Length: 174
Image (cartoon, rainbow, N blue to C red; front, side, top):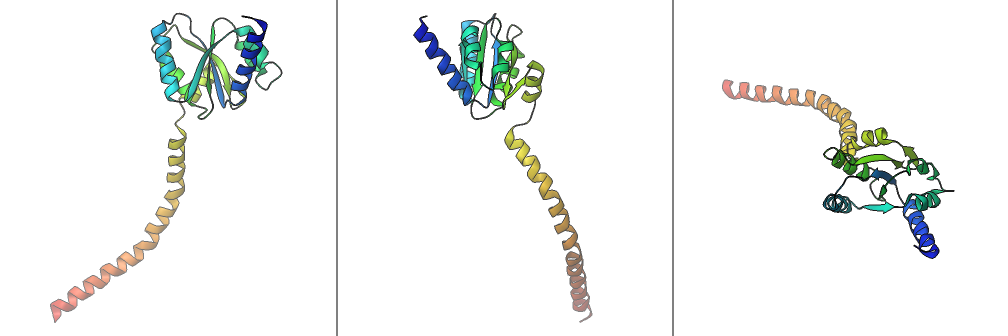
């Protein structure tokens, strides 16, 4: 690999990382080509880019950026999963996928600009999706209103019941 190609790779990786909402570093030792292809296909479906990187070039790419703390995890064979849309997508997919493959491991990563280790990535992977959290919020906000409507409708419902009984009583007596 020539100097120009290395410079091009460094700038391309820096550009990919600059627009990322999350990036997860993995160690892929012990995986077959078929398993790597399966993982890449799975990640691609969720708009996550998965690339094998050279550690020296990756260290240069993250140097003097907000992602400089990633350099500590750039040891041994390294691949990086970059997510631009959903910050949890890479963590969820990689954590789930790694449960069935002991050779595959997560080294660490960056989530919304903060360095996270493998334990934090596992915690992030267990979080519900954004849609599920929004649904919970909507239910929480709706509960007091539903209770208020029920309380306010109670006297009207009782009045309607009394009026029905009065009408029935008058029909019987007439």
